[in-house]
Image 1: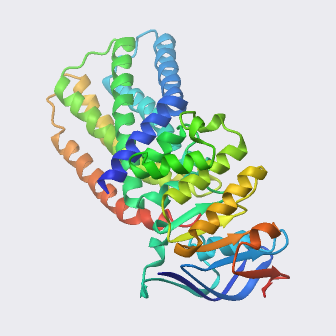
Image 2 (image 1 turned 90 degrees about the vertical axis):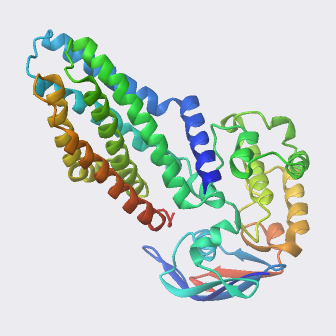
Image 3 (image 1 turned 180 degrees about the vertical axis):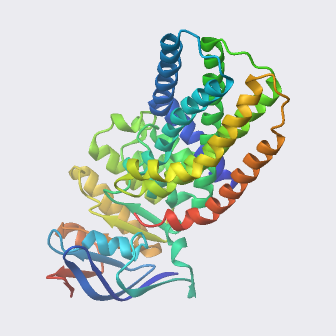
Length: 203
Length: 219
């Protein structure tokens, strides 16, 4: 059981993004962060994943009810976001070997499902943006993460890609804490709860 | 830790051999400058100290390009991807090892090219080889941590230059003095200099290893 508890989180850049947001996500739960452009969805996602520090407030992380240090959270996390890329000068197979040591049967099955198996030996910078997004999804899920951070996961994906993504999210939901920042109402509907960011306040 | 180290080293070397960014920058700079000095001077530079200064200036500026190994992780948004799988410590040590490999190779290539083009005699070959190895490794340790510190800053180029000056100055001073002895008929007395380089690199490396996880945290 993995749990993230956020208490009164606030963040501002040159303008205020949001203030006093509290939430809790545990394994088996999923939360969508929704709101207009510039409302701070990605920033809140980064804060919950300890990629960015909040200006004020506190976040606690627990594994099996035992607190764990914030800086180790990234090792429990799978991230699919525009600000994270696989190595573009390596092939998908080389990326998988870099991260996991070998291409397992699970990896082959997932690549087949994502329709990427036939492209696995091509260097990533030859891929389209949609195929690169599929790679990011594969790399995040192969890690079997305890917490999955998704920032606009359906972006650049075609209809079949979105359908596969939705199926995969539904499959891992019982075993993973999922936090998703999205503008897409169909993606948000996959989650149990929503945090709506509007006018700088989380509702 | 060891797995992360090995996989990161293999990954960095593989990416470098495919993209050839650092290798081309280093080779183009070092070859052009060495040959230009050779042609411009007509081989009439007689002073061993001037030869030592020119040689280390070329190695120093060629080696500065290794900072690209860290910058590439930030510019191509792969730093977080790497951190998802491996500890900051293994990332740092792997970059340090790759930087050392590249810097030692640079020193060897530039050193041989310089000796050949400028027709310099080396009176203490073993001392010269050890000095090249120790000096280039010490420079690699410096450039690794400075690149790590500056990678997350927008004005990284300027900051890299400013931070490099005080940190590399003691190394450059020592290696120039010792290399001068190798190029002249003086009795070689640079073992204390080699010890200094080893101690300086070890201290800087250990401190950097401890500090790196705190630097490589916010993206």
